[in-house]
Every structure is written in C-alpha cells, then in structure tokens.
Length: 90
Image (cartoon, rainbow, N blue to C red; front, side):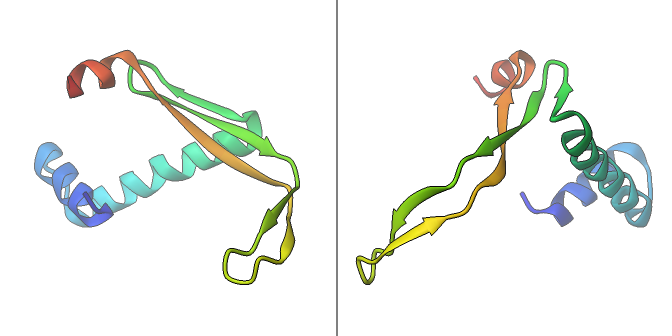
C-alpha cells in the first residue's frame, strides 16, 4: 500500500477530503518522528512500538571491489508489532 492508497482509505473511512486526509496522515507521521527524536520511543498501544536504536560505526566491505570501508555510526528505527496487529494478521 502506498501513501496515496492510505490517504484514499482514510478519506473514504472518515468522510474527510483527500487534502484533509493527507494533512492528518502527515501530522501523525510527523508526531511519530518528533516522538522518536525527543523520547526515543513511540507506542501505539496494541498496534506497534517504534524505538530509536543507535548503531555504532563498523567496518564493512564494498562487494564490488572488496575494499574495506568504514560505515559511520547512525540511528535506526525498530518496529515491534503489538498484539492487536498480530491478531489481525493471523
């Protein structure tokens, strides 16, 4: 499902215009990003938990040349499905 498909779904389910549904979805996504930046974790109870994880710098290898390269430290996001989401999929 693409973002546009999700916007269409939200618009149909809520009766919002597509423009309003787009703004609502963008607001939710921005809220998740801000929560991760500020607190490092966002929990949507029963649905999922987003958590920021720090990845240390490490050595890697360029598969084309075999040359050793340093992969810089970075932050990544892990997503863990909640019980309601797991139940809905099974």
